[in-house]
Image (cartoon, rainbow, N blue to C red):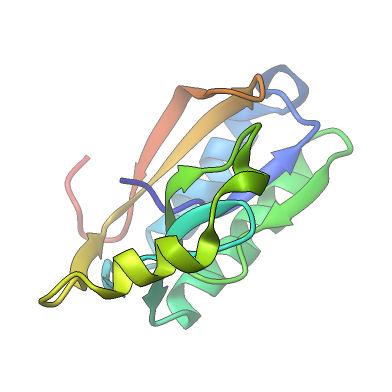
Amino acid sequence: MHCTLLHAVGLARADVDLDALLKDVGSYAQTVRPFILTFDRPSVGNVAVEISGWPGSPFAEIVDHLTQATMRRGAAFTAAPSRYPHMSLAYTSDGAEHVEAVSLRAALASIDGPLSGTVLADRLHLVEQWHDGTQIMWQSIAEVHLAGMPA
């Protein structure tokens, strides 16, 4: 599971001063206490099946800082920050326009019992991500722990 914070579209790791970025993000992370995100029942969106989470405020603060830090340390890119905590469970691809979204929503709604759960957000994973239209792939750059968490 992961909760995407920022897609720096058009930016590769070679375009960024990684040492400076990691120093900036690491210093900031030591000011952020780990927090709990609660995720709800899956829903069908335009490009993915996802689960939304709350509270949004600590998530949004981290997204804002990472966006600003990346802008300070890299080449030009398009920032596509997440606007709310969410985890994507499945993405659309060719043929998705033929999926019956109403039927899929009904199937999700018919699952008995609670589907919400909590996740401790205690670290940030910085990755280089790319996709070929079929698969999303990534390579780890660094794992940055939030305040008070062992490295």
